[in-house]
Image (cartoon, rainbow, N blue to C red; front, side, top):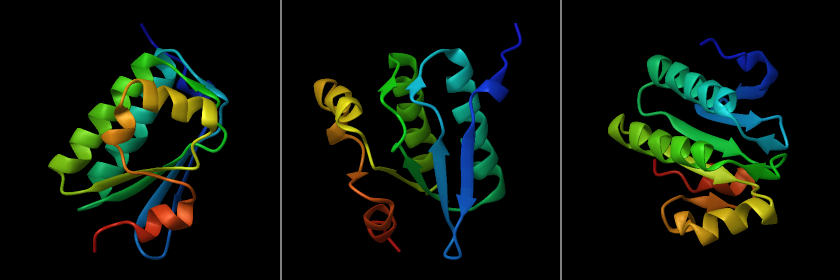
Length: 123
């Protein structure tokens, strides 16, 4: 079965200091297509960069599915294995509640702003 991930827009920006900002441009990140799209973006980053530093900007996201949460855990593990780092930034209150209820706020480094996330990376 082929998934149409073109309906899942994600903006990817690379900064001058090598940090990659990944910003899902949807409010509701549900369904397998979002999982596949986010996975593809992260795999592309892992193929192109050593020790990648990635910020996922969640400023537009109002809801995410449990399958996407699971994918984010997988992304964290893949980045750790590649000696990379992940930060999650600008999480909306409704989404932070999901992180809190699942206790994933203890597993992820969540920052208020993209700037704070960038400053929090280990050098």
